[in-house]
Structures are given as structure tokens and as C-alpha cells.
Amino acid sequence: MDCNRKTAYSVLFEIEKNQAYSNLELNRQIGLQNPDNPAFVRELVYGVLENRIYLDYLLAHLIPKGLSGIKKQVLTLLRMGLYQLIFMESVPPYAAIGETVKLAKKLAPGRDGFINGVLRGYQKKGADIKLPDSKKDLISYLSVRYSYAPWIVELLLSQYGMQKAEQILKAGNDRPKLSIRVNMTRTDRKSLAEQLTEKGFVIEEAALSERVLFVSGSGLLETKAYEQGLFSVQDEASVLAAEAVNPLPGQTVLDICAAPGGKSLAMAEMMGNKGVVKAFDIYGHKLTLISQQAQRLGLSNIITEESDGCVLREDLRDSSDCVLVDGPCSGLGVIRRKPEIKYKELADEGRELSEKQLRILLTASCYVKEGGILVYSTCTVNRIENTEVVERFLKERSGFTLLFERQYLPDTDETDGFYICKMRKQKC
Image (cartoon, rainbow, N blue to C red; front, top):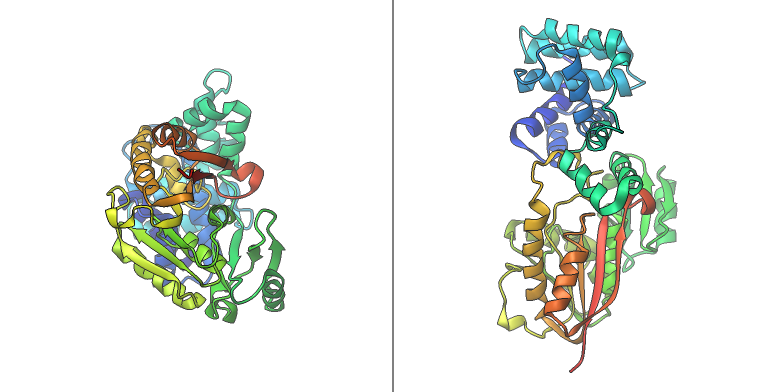
């Protein structure tokens, strides 16, 4: 049995059955099964996830009785085979079908003939299958073409208009560049770029943050530079959120929803290891990871504490020069990294989350000193969770002034979809 395809199947089936997170499950299965071509596994897994609705649309036209009675094991194998046939030019059609059928004999006994017939049916009739008519049903057309739940398509159309919405949908299917944040307490961007280039990595300087590099190549986390704490993996937009806070050495900074810790660590670096960053999160087990990374980076100015951002703490009132709230959100801005988000069936999630986001933001505002800074950020493109939350906040907290806000988008900024808003607490 082909270990690469078997590993990809294990990841996809676990996501289908138990709603596992793609990035975590992919790393787990690669570690367990040790495939000889992890890049192939990643391509197949993310490719199937990114195109799931489109693949199912084709399959529904190839199977007379539709997909309703198809077991998850069989459906996963059909998606894998079809993706290889359509998108993976490096895989000959005979291998796309043949290897899928071999897997089926082990993983879905008795259904290998059915799977073989469906995939060969695509070879004969696939070109005749048409997408929904965009003029008659734009939402269905965009949903199938780019593989998004219809409610997400409808949301983006209502907030961004047709042209921009389609650009965002398309960009969500692009593979993101690997970006790293340079630890400037230990090196600088130029020196790190030269060091990694010498090790065979292809390096590109980011345009929006002077702390960020884009890196191509395998084995980055096995390098001595990583071991020495010269960099961390972090999307450029996430770094920009920390830079918006702009903490100074010696200040007290509070990160309310800190896990997994990238922004806390970035701010600690910006402060030159002076002052204190208090990294809070409701999930205590996640804080351990922040402490481990701080040690690797040589940072001693981070304190972690389990704390609920919705609950006001009087001991923190007016205590911080800067407060960052990276609110829990729908994640519609990080679909490039977590394509399973595209298929959430929670059309009202953004509205529900916005209530929690506002509650956390109102609570966090009590911790800001007079003249201090409050930054609100999310990794979503949903305005209900972004600008609308800030508008409601400013109506309730008239003592805060809006300094700037920006929505970063994957199609124009080549970052995750990220919203950043910076406010100042006025002096009495």
C-alpha cells in the first residue's frame, strides 16, 4: 500500500469523521506513518480540502444516486482520486485511479470496483459537467467554483461586492508563503537572511514588516538558527498586530487572548527584553507553549497566567501601558492555512462571536492607563466581527479615541485576512 496516499487518507478521514484541525492532524499523521514524500501528502490533503465542494459537485453528477448514501471512507477515496486526476499534473491518470483502487481494496473492501468505475467515468464524461449558471444563481456558482459554504459566499458578497468578494474567495485557495519573524534581540533581518541562504533556503524580504522574511525550503525548524532562537514562524499580518501596539522598553503590556503566543513573544522582543508582557489565556495548557518558546528565544520579560478575558479583574484596573485583544473569531481570514473552515455550517457564528468580542474588549479597556493604547485584532474578514465591534465599543467607551484601523486581505496584501484597530485612552 502506498504510504503517502494512506497517510493523506488518514488525515482526510479524521477531518471528515471528527472535524480534526487539518494542520494538527497532518503533522500528527506524518509523524505516525512516516511517509517518504511528506510534500505529496500535504499537496493531496490540502488540495482535497480546498476543493471539496467542487469535487463533490462533480461526483454527484457521476453517481446516478448522488452522494447521500456514500460512506465516509468511500467518499474520501473518491475525492482523493478525483483531485489527483484533475489537479496533480505529476500523477499520471493510470496512477491516480490505480493507486486509489488499491487503497480501496484495503480501506473499503468491496467498493474498489465502484470507485474505479466512478473515476473512469470522470475521464469519459468529466468535461461535459458544467458549473452552475452564474447569471441564474451567483451564490451557487461561486460556492462550487471556489468550494465555500454558501453562507460565506453570501456574507462576502454583501460586505465586499461581487468583484472583491470573488478575489477574496480565490485568494483563500492560494497556498500561503511561509513567513518568519526575526528575533531582533539576537540578530537582524539581513544577517538571518544570509545565514539561511547559506543553508540552501530561498529568502524574500516582506514588504509590510521589517521583522519578517518569507522562506522556501524544507527542514527550517531543524536549523541551528531556529534552535538558537533567531526566529519564529508567524504570519506577517499577525506581526503587524503586535507592531501596532508598539510597546516600549520598560512598559507593562497585557495580551488578553494570548495563545498560541506569537504576538506576546513579538512584543517582548520589541521591548528588548525590558519591562513585562503579561500573556493571559483561558486555556492554561496553551500557556505552557508560550513559556517554552520564550525560553528558546531568550526572553525573560513574559509572564503567563490562566485568565478569562470576559471576567473583570480589579487587580488589573488602570495597570497597563498597552493592552492587546486578539479576539476569538470565525477565522475566515486564515482559510489558506485551515481550509476546513470553508465548510462550517454556522452562518450566525460571526454575530454570536461579536458579542463575546465586545465583552472582552470592554473588559480589557478597564486595564488601560490614561494615555495608554488598546489594540483590537482578529484573523477574520467579517466586518460584523471587526468594524462593527469597534463602532459599538466606542459608543460605550467614549474615553477612547480611534487612531487607525485596517483590514488586511489575502488577495491584495498577500497576508492572512486580518483586522487591526488601534485606540488611545484619553487623559482626564
